[in-house]
Length: 143
Ligand code: ADP
Ligand code: MG
Image 1 (tube, rainbow, N blue to C red):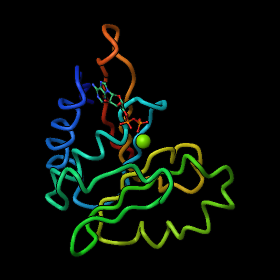
Image 2 (cartoon, rainbow, N blue to C red):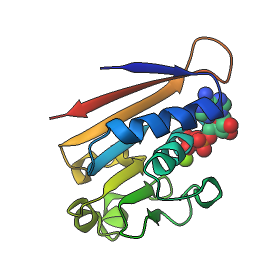
Image 3 (cartoon, rainbow, N blue to C red):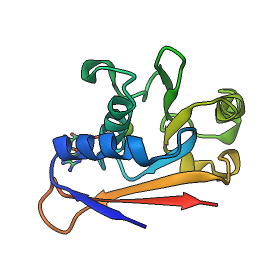
Image 4 (tube, protein in one colour):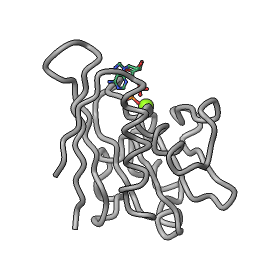
């Protein structure tokens, strides 16, 4: 279970680009961490690493909820922050997305564990012990 350490936004993007090669080709990846932890930044690196967008095309789906990348929709980036109840999340049709041949990155998905597939990757981001730009990032595969 590797733990990575980054000390800047740029390094977290670079880590995402590296992880893009190592993550399963398809399936759900939960990005877990507080506001400002770097979830969207890491997702941007993963999207860039999969070669499905340019840097200025990747933004936070906080308001749009779901962003789709690639000509064949091979990467999705979802942010459930603004949804409060599983009932609201259920209207998004996530199960249909989960069945697709795509990598699905989800922020705040851990708030709705009953709606997440048990077979998934979890990436946790937390502040490092040092300066404010330090982050510890660990990756684990469930099942
Ligand atoms: P989240 O999606 O978890 O709320 P964001 O990725 O949107 O977080 O924002 C992370 C913020 O923290 C950005 O403003 C970024 O510049 C800053 N930051 C500082 N150091 C780092 C780092 N090592 N990795 C990622 N972001 C960092
Ligand atoms: Mg975010």
